[in-house]
Length: 98
Image (spheres, rainbow, N blue to C red):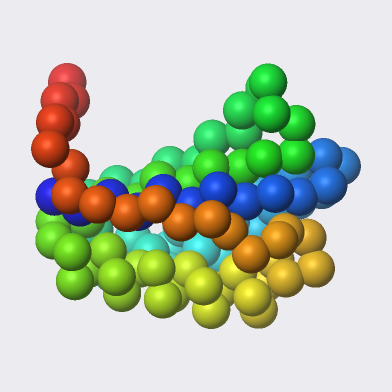
């Protein structure tokens, strides 16, 4: 499996709107990507104005496709609310789920 983690920075007052748009617009898009495993968004309490998304895919190619979709979608739908993200990606070497 392969994961892509994106770190976004936004005005704290716009976080709820970013989350709403992501839930309604991006989640359906990413779920349809071949190799999709899971997607989650964190709004760290101790880091006001930061949003972290984690995408998990079966393989690197699928994760790369999701990164391209995310880049396009964010530019078109959140461009006025968030700064371009920092990206961390790599192979998942430990994974456990219930």
